Image 1 (cartoon, rainbow, N blue to C red):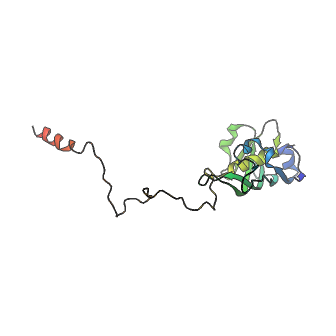
Image 2 (cartoon, rainbow, N blue to C red; image 1 turned 180 degrees about the horizontal axis):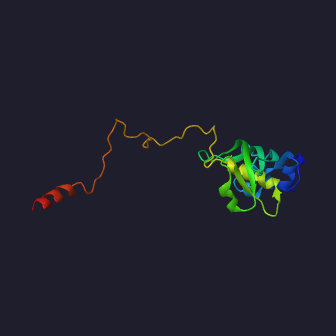
Image 3 (cartoon, rainbow, N blue to C red; image 1 turned 135 degrees about the horizontal axis):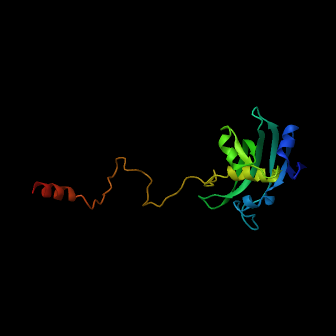
Amino acid sequence: MSREFPDIVDPWKVADGRRSFRGTVPLKWMTRLEAMLAPESETGTPPVVWDDASFSASFAFDRQGLVTIAIRVKAELPLVCQRSLEPYLEHVDRRSELVVIEDVAEQEALPEQYEPVLVEERRLALVELVEEELILAIPQVPCSPDAGELELPDDVSLETSGGKEKEQTHRPFEGLSGLIKDSAGD
C-alpha cells in the first residue's frame, strides 16, 4: 500500500489549491465492496488473491464554481463468474468526472457530464470515494471471459422458430370466434 493521501479532505480547500492525490488502498478496507467479491481462497484452485486498488484524484473548480473531482481507479477485482461459478479477476480501469454537492436537491441543477458526490460537513473520505467507483464498475452479471459459451442440454435450444420446425401452440379460445359469429347471426 502506498500512502500519499489523507483519510479525509475538505473538497473546497483542496480544489482551491488544485490538489491531486494518489495511492493504493487494500480491498479489505472497503467493507461494502468486500461483500461483492469472491472470498479469499484458502484451498481454491487457482487461489484468489486480493490485491490493492490504485487511484488518482484531482480536485478543481469548473467555470460554474463547482468543485470537481477527476478520478481514475484501477484494480483487479476477484469476482465469481455467474456462468462457471468459478472465481476470476475483473480488470477495472474507471475514469469519472464528479462534482461535490452538499444537498441532494443540488443534483437536479448539475450539468450532465458530472456524477454527484454528496458530502456532509465539508468532509470527503477518499477511500470511500474509491470504493464507490469500484462498486459502480462491477458488472451486473459477472462473467469471466474464459468461461466460454453456455452449454445447454441436447433437448434445449436457443434458436427461434426461424424456419426449421413450427412449434405447436395451444390456443384455448380459438373456437370462440366461430361461436361469436353464430350468436351474432341469431
